Image 1 (spheres, one colour):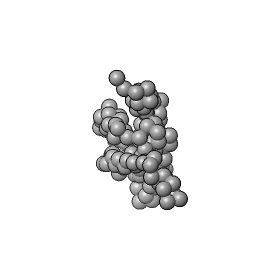
Image 2 (cartoon, rainbow, N blue to C red):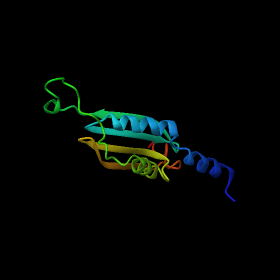
Image 3 (cartoon, rainbow, N blue to C red):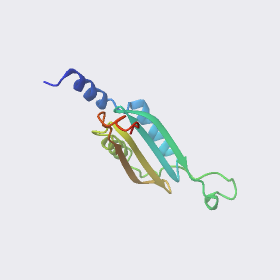
Image 4 (cartoon, rainbow, N blue to C red):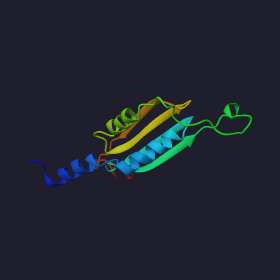
Length: 127
């Protein structure tokens, strides 16, 4: 049997990205043609979503000056959702960055941070 505090951590990891947050992430991805979306993770839960979109003047439609649409229709939405959730597995601190080019997700980067309580403040600084 797990200690009480470990059960809490496991429970929070299961609900790390709420369905509402995942819908918001998918909406942001769907509206991004070039750029990236960073999902910031702390204490085993999603705390922030950052969007960085690149606008290339050469791709603006000369007649209406409208931006190109987001993700292409052939994007595997359930597969993208699964990959995002998979990137958060066993992560306590870090970020997942989704890179989009020409309306296609081309890369998902996962950067995990390790925090060591025994080292914080050892030399007057923190991690």
